[in-house]
Image 1 (cartoon, rainbow, N blue to C red):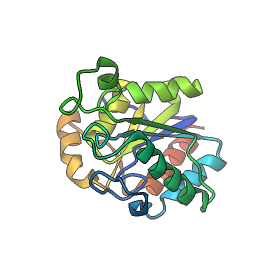
Image 2 (image 1 turned 90 degrees about the vertical axis):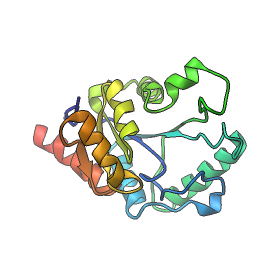
Image 3 (image 1 turned 90 degrees about the horizontal axis):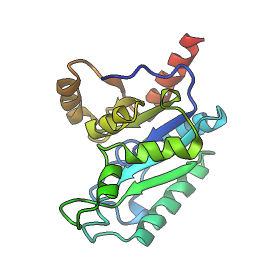
Length: 198
């Protein structure tokens, strides 16, 4: 089910790889972090509007033994610095390092791993935001599914894996998902929906 875009936006949940930063396989080196063009400005725009921003990202490199929690923290510290240079910030960082093929079964972490909604629900609870006042932006259909399972509207961006994921989303939904060319265009789409609802 495609949720309507919120008429009042309080929280945006961002996928990381392919949405906020360029898609790379198993990013373990902070030096390889590269922002999607226009992404930092889009986050700063949300910040100035008083909209909270949360990252919700699967990081199976941890379960695969390619990355440690400390290593991920270094990547995110570097990313936060790149955002800060453009006046942008992330208010909450959530990740799931679990992968069922590379770790003992863990029902709690399985619930957190997208396409399950655990991290989305955590972010909503953290900020005390109702699902109808939030939106998720990601480059894969599993990002959309995780949001939908939490009752949150979602936008698929064409950056990252988005173009190849569009067919999956269309087949699953039986219609077009909410879609934008990139993060900046997705933020504009959300702002336009809120303006039209006034």
